[in-house]
Every structure is written in structure tokens, then in C-alpha cells.
Length: 236
Image (cartoon, rainbow, N blue to C red; front, top):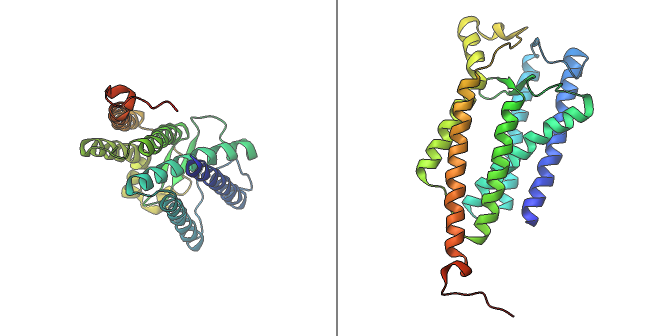
């Protein structure tokens, strides 16, 4: 629990740093931290700096996960947990600092790797909340039942869900790039979003999480001394 709390504090702090960087960028581009669309082209050198910064952010989250977890399973769960908490508190601090986003349906540029991700704020928040809960639960359960793992079929379901959700964020951008090239993204303002594709992906992620947590709780009950009947609790 101490490791989990430490990673939580680290991720919240990173959420603040991310919000601060975005505020500075919007002030530089629009002279208004609450404005994002229509997009304005970044200087190529500055754009590369921003892309690398995002990559370094992922590396930082991965490194703290490696430090926090003792085994591969724990490290992967800590990474997912740190990423989710970071994402949630990025929006918390952005809202607290400048009042943005004004609503959960406001469009945002979510990420830049490998291409720009665009979607309503509520979509990544739904995924982040689910993953934060699931990964924290599995970290705690794994501490009590070391043989907890994720079955291969659930990994496949999870990955498929993530790919569908990711495509819902990038489909519009890919279309513009195919039709008009990078210039087509200048002055771009998103107007529609493929909610159907997102929800199919989100429900797939939910299914993988539900199956994994259910299986983990069954293992916990099987390993619990008071459920086996042959290993009663010792009373000191």
C-alpha cells in the first residue's frame, strides 16, 4: 500500500506538470489557455520537442513502475495505474487552473504519437478511471495471492479494445492526412466523434477487466484459510 500511495502521489504531481506545460503552449499559440481549436501549426522544431517530451513522459511513468514493482506483473499494473492517474489529474489541474475543459464533451488533443489523437475529454477519462480501479485492485490482490495472472484470451480482448478506442481517436486525423496531408490539420476543428467505435472498444476493455478481476477474486477465496475448512484462522 505504501508503494501504491507513492506511485499515486508521483502520478498526481506529473498530472500537474502536464497541465502546466499545456497552459504554457496555449498561451504561446493562442494567448488564451482555454483555446485549442482551430489548431495552429507548431514550428517544426518545437513540434519535435513536444513529441519527444510526450515520449519521455511515458518513459518516466514506466521507470517509476519498474521501481515500484517487484515482479513483471506488478510492474505492468503499476505502469497502467500511473498512466491512468496521471491522465485523470491532468484534467483536474487544468480545470482548476484555467477552467478548461468547460464540459466533458469538449474535444481535446489527447496525444501526438504516432499521430495526433483527438476526442472528447470524457472518453479518455472513462478509460483512465476503469484502468486505475482495475490495476490498483490487481496490485492489492497480487500482494495476497501471488499466482494471480491475466489469461491470454483476456489480454487479447483488452488489446483489441484498446486498438478500437485508439482508432476512434485517430480515424478523423488519418482521413485528413490521407486526403490533404499534414497541411490539412492546420485550422482543424473536430466536429464529430465515432462514439459507436469507442463504446465497442470500451466494452471490450471492461470485459477483459471484469473477467480478470472475477478470476482473481476466485483465486483469493480459494486461497483464504477460512474458505478451505482445513486451515482455520489461528487465534492468538
